Each structure stands twice: as C-alpha cells, then as structure tokens.
Amino acid sequence: MAAPIAIHLEFGGGAELLFGSVKEHHVTLPNQSEPWDMKQLLVWIRGNMLKERPELFVQGDTVRPGILVLINDADWELMGELEYELQDKDNVVFISTLHGG
Amino acid sequence: MCQVDEEYNGQLEHRVTPRVSKKCVKCKENTAVLIIRAGDAFCRGCFKEYFIHKFRAMLGKNRVIFPGEKVLLAVSGGPASSSMLSQVQEGLSRDAPKKLRFVPGIIYIDEGGASGQSMEERERAVAQLESVFRATNYHYHIVHLEQVLSLPSSVLEAGSSATEKPQTGSSYKAAVDQFIQTRKNQHPDLSVENAQSHPSSLSMQEVENGGTSPITPEQTQALQRLFASVRTLTAKEDLLHTLRQHLILHTARTQGYTKVMMGDSCSRLAIKLLSNISLGRGASLATDTGFSDPRYGDVVIVRPMRDYSSKEIAYYNRMFDIPSVFIPGLDTKAQDKASIQHLTESFVTKLQTDFPSTVSTIYRTSEKLNTACPPQNTHTQPSAKCLLCVCALDTKLEEFSAYQATLISEQLSQRRGPGPGFTPGTAAAPGLPPASSASQCCYSGGGQHQSCMTGEGGCCSSAKEPETVDLKSLLCYSCRLTIKDMTAEDALPQYILSEAERRKRRSQMREEISEFLLDEEEDEAILRVNGSL
Ligand SMILES: [Zn+2]
Ligand SMILES: [Zn+2]
Image (cartoon, rainbow over all chains, first blue to last red; front, side, top):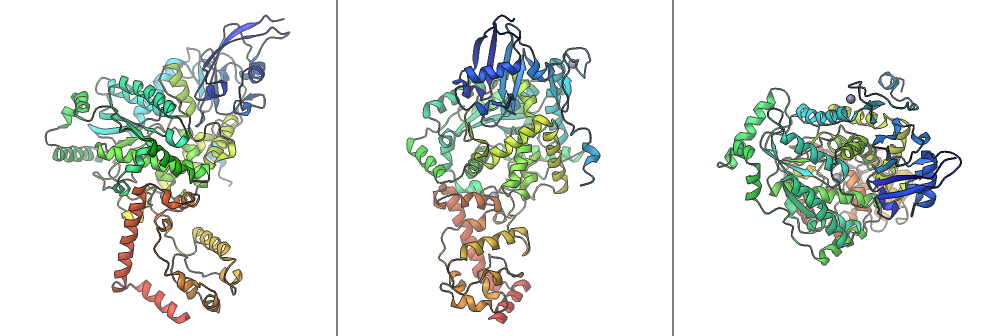
C-alpha cells in the first residue's frame, strides 16, 4: 500500500498550452496498491489534467519526443525514466524543445 | 555505402538503460544532473563551465567579429536566442583579456500579425521581452512584421562587403586593422576605444529604446491578407522566414550593425538542413546552415549557438534562470504533417530520442558541406541572386540538369489539354531546349515544328506575352515553389514587387541591346533556329 503523495508539476517551453496555459500545478496522487512511478504519472496526467490534444504530450507510454523531463532538477535519464518511483514532494518538470511548443 | 560505418560506429548504437546516481564525467566528484552528447553525464558546475566555454570557443575559432563592431542579436524570446543573449552578457561582463569586445544591440520581430495573435497577446509578449531587454542595458529594437509593408526596395539589393571574407590566422589582425580604419573614416569622431569604454553612452545617442512606429489595424489586415493568400503552411513558414530576414537586414543596415547573430541551435540546424533539402534549397545549404552567412554582403549573419543542442540550452536556461518568453507561432499545436518543416522536426526529434547522436551526425554533415563548397561569392551580381532569399540563383543551369527535367515535365503536364497536334512523346525526346528560351519548340528538330504552327496560340505567339510581373525568373528554385503556393503574386509587399519590376526592366534593357552584343553562343542558337524553320 502507498499513501497518497503530493507532487509539484511544472510545464514549460510551450507544453503549458496543453494545460490551460498554467505552468505550475500542485497535485495529489491518490493512494493505490503499488508505488507511483513516472509511467503511471503520465497515464494519470493524460486522464486527469490534459485539456486537449493528448498526442502532443504523451505518445505510447512515454512523453512525446522533444519534451524534456526533469525530476527534482535532474535529467530523468539519470533517474530511471519511466521506472522512477515518485516520492512525496517531488518536483517534476516537462519542457518542450519543439518549435511551436 | 560501405564506408558509412568507419566513424559512426558505436555512436549510432541504441541508447542504453541508465544507471542511477552517476558521477560527473568531468570532475568525477559531484553527482551528475544531466546527460548530454552521446551519454556524457555532467554535474551542475562542470556543465556551466562547459556551456560558457563553448560560446567563446565558437567565436574565437571563427574570428569574424571585430573589436568595437556593432552586432545585432536576433532574439525571438525562444530558449536558444535568449540563451545567446545571456552568453553575450556573460562574455562582455568578463575581465580582460577574456572579455568579448563588440557592441551588442537586440532586435525582436513581432510576428503576431501573421500567426493570428490578438493585439493584447502581442502587447503582452512585447512587454515581457522589453523587461528582459531593459535589464541588459543594450540598445534594442522592437519591430512588427507589419513594417515589411513599408520597407524600401533597396533592402533586396546586396550590399558590397566592407571587409573581405572571414579571416583566419594572422590575416584576422589585418582584417581588424582594416575594419578600424574604415570606421575611423566613416565616423572620424568615434574611435574604437570610445565605443568600448562607453557602450552605454553610444546607445544614448541613438533613437530611444524600443521606439516602434505604431501599427494600424489596416496594416495588420494587409499582412493577414498576404498570409491568407498562401495556400500551404509550408509556404507560409517559408514566406514568414523570408520577410523576417528582410526586416532584420533593414534594421541592421539603418542602425549601423554589420553583424547579426542568430540563435540557431544544432538541433534546429539539423532540422533546417533536412527540411531545406525537401524544400529545394539544396544549393544554398552551406549558406543557410553555416556559421557565417555572407549572402547580404555588407551585413554578415553568424550563428554562434550552432554547437549547442536544444537539450543543453533548455537545461542551462532552467538551471541558471535565463528568462525566455514562449510566443505561439504558425506551427503551434499543428499536426505533424501540417508542413514540411514541422514534419521534419518531428522526424528528427523522434530519431534523436532513440539514437542520441542523430542530430550531431546530421550537424557534422553540414560542416562538411561548408568545406566542400565554400559560402557563395559575395560579389555575385545582384541580378544573379534570388529576389527573395538573396542566395545565388540555382536556376541558371545547363540543359540536362534535374532542374530542367522538372521544368519540362511540369510544362508537359500543363499543356496536355490544348494544342491538337501535340503529342507528349515527341516533346519528351532528349534534346529539348531549356524552357526559358522564348522560341522553345520551334527549335527542336524533326517534324515537331509543324505541330506548333498548327496548334492555336502556338509557341511563337506566346513569346510576345505582355510583361506581367512574372517573378519566376528572378527567384531560386525553392522560392519559386513558395510563390507558386500563393493565389496571387501581387499580394506580395510593395518593396518586393517594385524591385522585381526594376530588375525586369534592367534585363529587358539588356535584351534590347543584346543584338549589338552578339556572342558565339547566341550566333549558334540563331543559326540552329533558322535551320529548323
Ligand atoms: Zn563535475
Ligand atoms: Zn530564393
């Protein structure tokens, strides 16, 4: 069992346009039987936060190519990417490097 | 084919699964915070050092900017150009001898009128950028895209370069001396030392910062009509790029800047390289993507960010609080297939995710292009340059080029309808002369001339067409394609149309006197025409 965790999400580089142009979001992930990882977070974002055009943010089970992910200000490639287990008060940032955002 | 693997071996490998809490490859002490290039992990401190060093190294290696020279930084608000601005600030604030020595100014082109932003959105974006620019204390120019409507046609004339081509080695010193001499002659009261020690007083002498001429709703509507007349997003993006360049060039010339810095990252340039090939700009690749771009002659474009990936830039901006302003453009929220440029971006980005050396491999290709075919001659006659992109015309080629083949097949498909005696088979025979010739089918051999004599409105009468403003002959292959996607050529801004008119008149004049200037080639052509009739 995992208790609900509160995390801070941030979107930049134009990715915020898909989230009502709001850059920062404080969200609480509900408790579930197994720990939250990045893969589940993306599913959750897609189901609960994305306002439009989900394919511009998630593709397959990961982020759209060209969107960078930082977990607690470090490259998620150093943190296990989709397998990273989220902790309470984690800070996750998504930055689009694509031309139109 | 079989030689491809020699140097890319190993680098094209599929990415490996990451290990947790890696150490920095440079100091081997601190915990790494990001992975750049093909798998190198850097800590925050080493990354900063690496990033700053790279900017200076790029300028140092190329040695094209002179002490005291006025350099215009083209800042769009996006991450790469904002990062470029911060690097210039960093370089100018250093202690000698590591200090950069030029006088920077900033230009922002507000494209909101073309990309459908409301006036309020545009004003908000401008206000955000102005607060960034004001903090630098540099002189800055806010220019609205609507201002292309009042550009003078002289902007399309290539200026003569004040200094020779980029210098290397010891000749750089000679070039600097020459530059200083030229400046002293032009402004006897302003020595380089003054410009260096009082950069702020220099800006004060000029027009007040951000002094933009207000734009009227009519101008915005005219601009919107222009973009509405373009059928495809591909051509819209290309046209927007062209007009933006003209505005930057005009501002640079009128404000006395001799260099323009563009913030293209290597990720952007890799995409540009591939999409430009698809757009038919193959002949101009080296100029379009190289470090230094001399096409305008008196104002040279440089691209000092071309060694940075978009990932490095995004991380640097985030870690060191470099402000940037996101402004939606033509391609915002567009589908992958909306335009050639957009599709290429998604193709390269997808490939890069799986193969982290994709961008650097394409980028290295562009560097090889530069050495293989050096930037186009700045001394090419103005009439031999494209009216829109100001690159050397690639359309004046020999008869059997792929370009001529394209033209011929295009012509055939257009003429299939009218002309009773016309059979595509005979016309497609090899040896068909270039389509630009006014007397085209008359001078191909065999019985073909008969068909054109009988066909109504035959080729011989079409040669006497009234002089509509036919832009094609003044454009490079790629710009022709863009113009072809417009519903009406005369929707183009006046400065382009007037310059086209002027060039047309000039070439007509040349034609009129050409009979007194017979050269051997023309002699031969006339003989052949007479013979076949
Ligand atoms: Zn380190
Ligand atoms: Zn062109």
